[in-house]
Length: 349
Picture 1 (cartoon, rainbow, N blue to C red):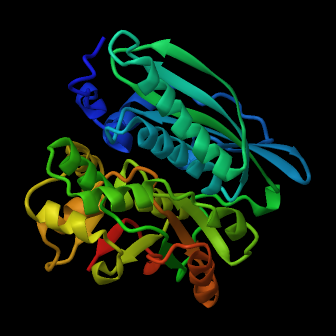
Picture 2 (cartoon, rainbow, N blue to C red):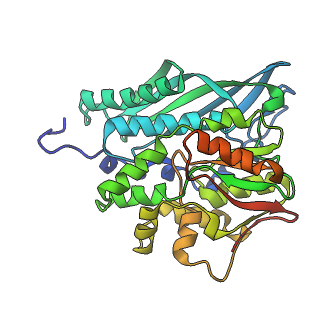
């Protein structure tokens, strides 16, 4: 048992943190290609195709069940904050399908001989607090004794089949809107190195514990053609998933992309995650960077976001309406960052 006179840092028990501990996209593709896709029922509206954020199964003409799971190792040292971040991140995948969450199941893996019981209790309490904010119960779960602390949720939601938003539905000339700024992974790397300022930590908490509730209302907008959330593969990786699914090219203007100011300071000082480098290795060949894009900007494009923002492809004529929705729900950093055009891949100027 840890001596509480010298509190144990949760992040010291993990090899990575948050969505930065995702398996790299290239490695994941290699793993999954050996898993055959057997005959799928017509009622399965979304599954493994195009890396959708959740599975969706049509129950009847007015209801489809949305199911997802997400869990990871600590991104912060405070146990209550770790629970909050993990829960917010897991629920986001339901919002990213345009669905309303209805209940969750907890996934808990803890080194029970290393962490004091009150620390573990505070992790689960943090997750429960976010579920209460989302208006859903934690109705059960599963726990095991592990080497590293792991926490997350299975989340179930409901959506009308006609209002389901996939990540593959973008159309040529659609505007691209991002709901939260980039840089959470870089702040987490600074924290792990003991260099993150108090202000940086507060910004990190602000964004990682903010529920992506606009997804529910976005589902009712016919001009919203595609929706996803930006997580472990970074903005570039998740945007490439949208681009491949729609068979279109995505174009971004760097100056329009919202970024956490403190993250810029840290990445310019050479602080970023190993996952960012792995992400670029996995999909960098599909990305064309303008001559003015520096290395630190590339690191932000591939920075793994934990509980990142919604990424919306919508008709240009409702762009202002979408941005107004984000503003109304407290997402002051939401911005139009680019558009879709004929072609393939991603370009950043």
